[in-house]
Amino acid sequence: MDLLKLYFSLVYITVTELAELQKHGWSDEIQRLINDKFIVVIEQFTDQEKEEAIRLSKKIAKEPSSGDKNWHSHIPEAEAMTLMLKRMYLKIEIILLDEKSARNIAQEMKLSFTGFPGLLAKAGLDGLLTQNDIRKLLKTCQQHGTHYSDHLIETTAKNYGGE
Image (tube, rainbow, N blue to C red; front, side, top):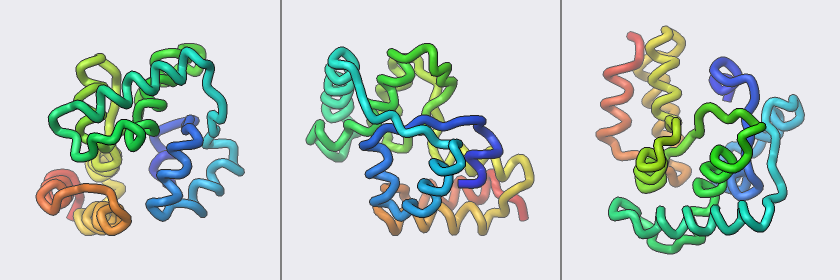
């Protein structure tokens, strides 16, 4: 989480994203960053924003690479995209998306995005993380339910981590 502070000045998340991060074991870290006012939780959406998030969520679910065809499961990613699209005044420059189907939709929409492996790769290139650091962090995410393949983990660690 400290890497987020290094590369971003402020992070917006939605209530559904917060729940997803907590499910993946980041409760204490997220709460600390919320208390530090580094993470701002967006709690309410307009009716138009809700409709857009549902539309995007359904599109993500139908995407061929989606491993979960239940559109409700894709609301966190869809809400992140909706914030970027509909709340221009927030000046969101990039969104963090790890799910392949959501990334495909974001790419189709020409939205700027990266994922947690991309953030770790940048930190590795900047000399902040070793191969073992990257491997350990991605393995931890994998153990908490993020669907990173062993190949992705090894490739990211070897190509971007320092010795």
